Length: 246
Image (cartoon, rainbow, N blue to C red; front, side, top):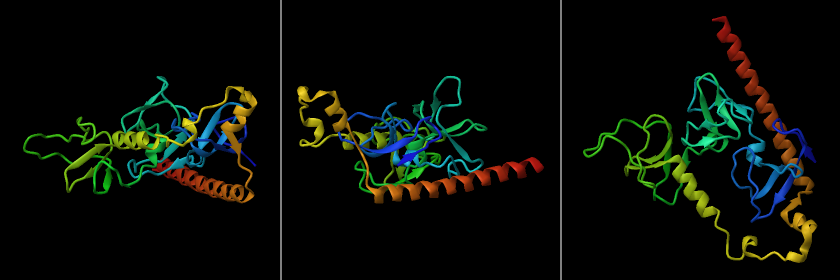
């Protein structure tokens, strides 16, 4: 079964990317492991979440306007600065061109509550921090990297009861580094036989999913997301029309 995505000229199929193969998602630029939408010819891959992301969304961090998913940055410099984590990006983003507001795809879907190994309590996502009233300092410091937090511009995870604070990027990078470590018996530690040939290597790199039940579920999910996208776009057009009448 093939799928059409707005960001790629070719149809995409569902593949099972084997662990240890360094293929990154063209939307969020993170490593793919497991099932993904892909065009093997172009080495274009999307996580299922990224491939199914709605073209428009209303995010609580930016209530004034809808955010639109774009495959390339709208800035002439060729990249954008994420308003969530403060890191640059050059792939997909949710953006509000009116406000120069941009989010990485993965940042747009950050959980409101995070369980992280750096702290024994759950951490709450904050879009802006209140003014600090410490005896020794008037600013917040990340308890993971020990660098200062930007109180107004970027997001953070916090446990205010314990005065624990962390950059969004620090919580994500630490989780990614831990999860990226392969197990001793994983495919990343197994030596490849040089005599296997390129055709055999291609077969081990990918496995196309042919499970009809899974494909039917994914097709249903895709249709539901298309309906949601149409509803969001209708809301956006309605808000534009109303604003033009004022």
